[in-house]
Length: 213
Image (cartoon, rainbow, N blue to C red; front, side):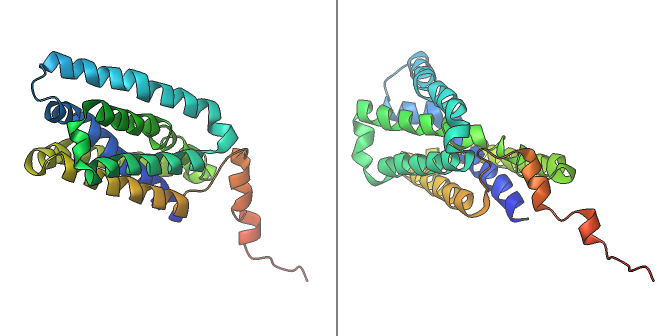
């Protein structure tokens, strides 16, 4: 149950942040560049994704078995929280387009070099065979709920409360993700799927033994 809370909860939290961030990106960039045309903000958002997010995914894939899924996921959440908190705590960043875009790009890099790459992988490894499909499905369902909330609620919060409040909320979401990862997600670095089977009580050992008289 603890593992399921860890996998489903972290998937939920990253999707709140990721989809909310993605859907709100045009609004965020419009607030940052109020006189820019839609084409300009779209190109800027695409450039941030290509320059920051795509490399983050490949770096994560290359280091997954070297530094571990749990480490990548927790570090990603922590850096995301720091990037969002910087925008929240230092509102003047929004008045410095280059600085803002750098911080925003860092958050995108660590979304991919972090929980957006690991949350769909970890549930396929940390559960025994008889539970793996069900647990992965439940974890993915948690992510879809988070995606729904992020996509539909955060843009409204951005419009109603502004950029700083929205980033403060995202910082809190990412921090919760880091805490949940550290507390409830096991590390599978350099471990086989069979290791999980060995950690479960076997049917033979679970059933009572009867002596033969």
